[in-house]
Length: 392
Length: 183
Image 1 (cartoon, each protein chain N blue to C red):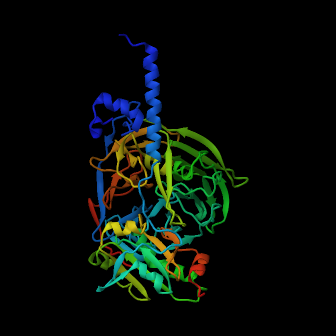
Image 2: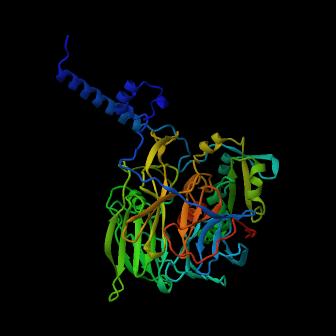
Image 3: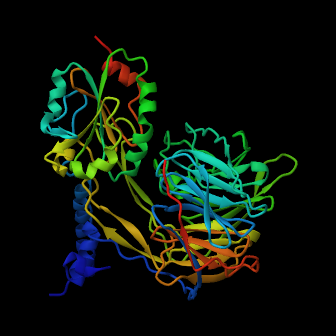
């Protein structure tokens, strides 16, 4: 508790805390945390001009493919560090298109929320193959965290994006967590259910997850509770069945999750103003080869107050002390890592022992995957400039 | 005089209970949020058409033009507004396909014209009027009930607010027909 923020004495603050909740006490770790080891930087990839990478994937041939955030320009970087554009663009303007590597065959899936998109990228740079996005039972086509499967199939969790939690159409509406679809958009399996909780947005918020695939399984880790679930394909029926559940370590006691929803009387369409109180145990994650999980873990949090015209308790939880933890396919902690002065926004792992990390500035940092024995690629140059203009 | 433990406990309970009441009362009060009223004209806010510094119009003039109006409130640094700018025309054409009367379209911002120029460049064609508020300050936006961008208002032929929309969406087709058809 920061007593000085309230301008009150310790005793007075303790008394008033019960009455007015002037601030919220900090969330502290409840267990010992392994000291993280530093990761060493191999290369820094950034745009020479306005190219801001929105997605990245390592290719089997040691090249790297990136997609720009402005106009969806696809850029390939050879192992010599030279960047080339094949004049391929993914649809959308200022969209956030993510790239996911199929760890079995090296194919790349591109997905975005706005516009709703799923597409396979040709790793040779010859083209893209747009997949059909299935219709969701809550209405419309939705995309979310996705994972490529074999034969162009893909798994998707359409309601599971922290950045854009989806409003429940009715108080008791529920839906599967993960849908599995063919390339043509036909759904052939669905697994899991949204968390059984009240609230308009909380089921979607609490199902925020990262998806991956390994052999004939789909793997999902929910950020809120740090639980990894594995679903195995039943070869007879084609359905996916829940196979195992592993709870990763939790380093703090989560406060109760809350939502507050306010609507304007003069707005009839999508006018919810929302405030959430939520501290997920995982900030961001990705699955790598051999089923490994790379998760940026939150260790503590503090309440950041800011004035809001709508909510008396304007503010949000800000997680602290993050580190990258690597787990094997069974959930065993392999190591804990950090990069000095770098705040990891999101990351991707490839099959050649490289980690691609997007930090606060629009660049990609390439580091050696400390958990991978595959070191098939020569290191990229220390600095790679993408000399490609993003234009309509 | 010694204080009995039961009195202390009772005092704590009373203080806690009273505190909870005060806290709930405090939580439930809504800070004043202004905005327009459905079925009423917009509050009067002055605006300038882009590139015409001397021409000042006012939102309350919509009541006398006998023309329905689609007003999109944007900010030049709003990425959703940028996305909406690129494809709204096609989507609006679908919504307004069966409407037999012209619709005035205004994209309005509270940013100064200099800051807005990169956003509006190349989009002046097709009957869209880009406007900046006068004066360019936040209070005007709040007067119109715009707390996030893009916010879209559909005004009927009498200048009354029919539908408000937040985000990259447009008023539904049935609302557009009801607001804009000739009498």
